Image 1: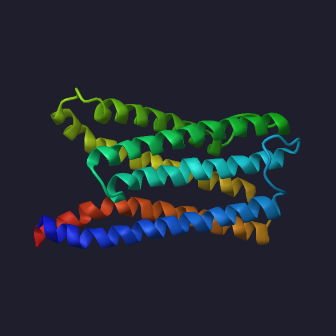
Image 2: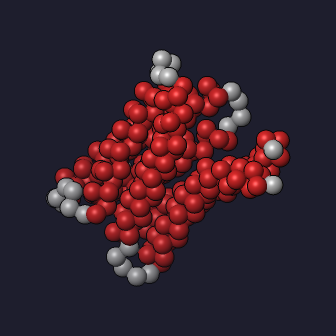
Image 3: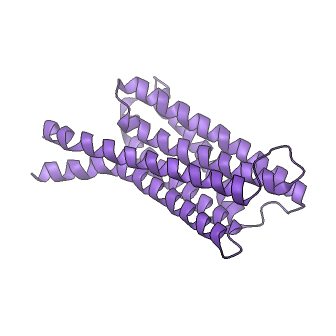
Length: 226
């Protein structure tokens, strides 16, 4: 059964992970076109607030969405010993969390430059809640799965909840990105269409990442029945 499961699983998860990365690449290109062509460019130090918020979008997509998704897939898709995969999984999450914190700083800098109040939109609240949960989840993972003196039984019991919490936080991150993008689609036209396709690219990436994690469980159920 285990051999059958592995034979079925490996090529499928490889293709799904590849689809996720292609979606992320296309979305990155769309975001760059939006930022550079339609929204004036990227600059953290500009007196133009629009250029600062463009940086926020790029930083948060790379850290909050792409690297977060890669961290989730890493534990299942990177070949090698479990300890190495676990270390990469944890490091990528830490890098994503660091990018998120920097992205929040950039957002507050934009608010200050544009004289916009902080924490007044659904996007702001979703983002702050998600980042706080992300930090708690990372600390929980390090303490539970990285500390060698934690009993094996505790790790086994915590694992499904860790996976559930991770996917929930990732979905919240996707929702945060979508609400943030939709805030910028204020005028109908080519730019708004680009924003919609960028949002669809983020959804496609998120779907592929979740499928990468859920596929092993679905195939395990099917092969168990067989």
